[in-house]
Amino acid sequence: MKVGRNERNKIIRNIILVAIVVYFLVLLITQQSILDRNIGEYEKVLKKTEQIELENEKLKAELEDADTDEYLEKLIRERLGYVKSDETVFVER
Picture 1: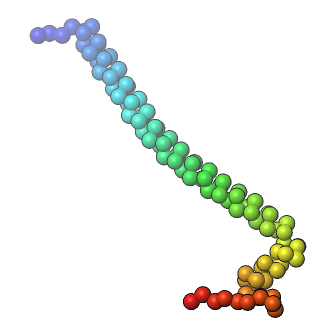
Picture 2: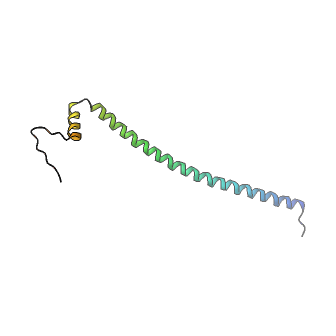
Picture 3: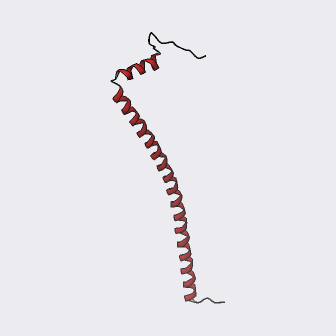
């Protein structure tokens, strides 16, 4: 069975077309997986940034209160364990 020149050209053209389509499908799938991974990393970084911003706001508020007598008293009680002379201390075991 002889295949004419035109038919052979059509077959070659179709094979090339299928190869190009397959190439772009593989490229699309690969790019999608990379994009999904990057989106996941972005969301992690965004969440960490929000946590750091909240911590920063707490520290700013604490810094503003640092000059008050109440804050200093609180720090002395918590960190050094001091109590007032008229207070009773309970120790848990």
